[in-house]
Length: 283
Image (tube, rainbow, N blue to C red; front, side):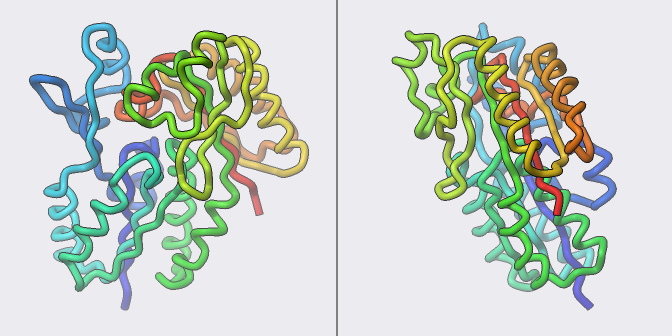
């Protein structure tokens, strides 16, 4: 009889309740300062990262290969025959390839690694849906086949306070940087479903207009479809709470979840001022 393990990473921003409910194995990214290193969400909080950005901007690294090896060894001992890993977009990180290498060292577990082509709750909601399918007793093959259609139902948008951190971390993708900063352009950013990189969905001038526009975009989708709604932030609690409160009232919101602060590793690359909104289309 097959036994399926579910694996993800800390950038999915899943809360402890969901992690426990679906027995999700979460691999931590690493936050690296000049003289110290932390495991994302375990040894450092998002707030600690943001509060120290004026002193030092850390770098980040994917989960340690040792952590991946230890996880697969533990899963083998626990009798797992299959594993599904749903990870941060391969256009933003090498974690997809890292888990692939680790899984190949453990042929006794049939592993499928799925590229979420997203981040934060855009990734997390795919993991949650996968957890539901495992709980329902779906086969490994059925779940693997369902994942691409689940991913297509995700809509993610975010704005940042400044493009400086995306540029510095090399995560800016197809988002225009320096000129945009000079003109006070605050782009609405999304993730390209094809290459998994950031791109400018809309160009808006000024913070207030960008926040209004991101809510307009989300409401336009909700006017057409019933969706679960998630809001998260990167050191922008007030702005994200305001957006959450307004959009939650939309009649086509089936459930509204305030995701709180994004993972520390995401905060390193986005900087303070991020407001992120995610919709997941109901079937």
